[in-house]
Image 1: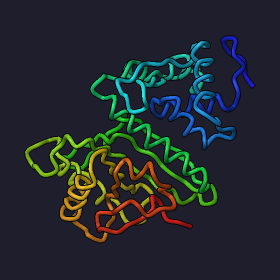
Image 2: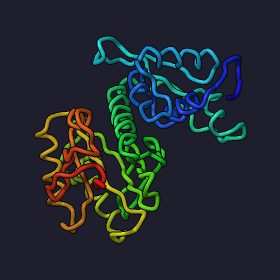
Image 3: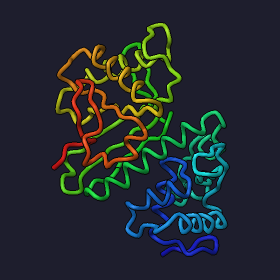
Length: 277
């Protein structure tokens, strides 16, 4: 183990820092994520205590969420510059200032929901020998196809430890029900996003390793999801190509997405997140 700033750093500490590099996490979300660690936290209090030690050492920082979904306004944790350098090295190029700063209040629910999705997928994947070996944060990259420019809420790759030559790539679109489903004139409409992803996907052949699925997660009602999937079914130009799979946030969090076929494709087929071995 390494010693830095008067705290003895363990392998689990580096797993914590890596998890926070993906997305801000509350202690509860970190405890969920830790189910993928070699030594998981048995309860939230232990996760909170370790975060406090890492904060005192200067590697992480916390900010309050304006949410009451956990009984009280929870704190979310992010890396500091020192924590980032600990992962990537002293000469690492720093990300933008926003990476280290507070999340704007208007984005709190959105950010919290993205973190819940990622934490749950990582934790469930561990039980099936699946790990998230690549991750890109919200607004950290752009996909372009003709007139369409897309900025996913996240992108990640899943791989079975027994089949590393067969990765499964996803981009995440988290829907809070604020965008119109159908509108060609609205640059933020879901219809335009669907058309954009369809155009981008059409560049790849079926077995191209660069291919991905759009994981669409709505935080609102099942009827909202049904409207979106119906739009996908009519807008995707090749009906034989799976471009989008969708679910509600609560459905995703209530199931094991690797075992339960609770995701629905643009063809109307129920499926697991990745094929069951």
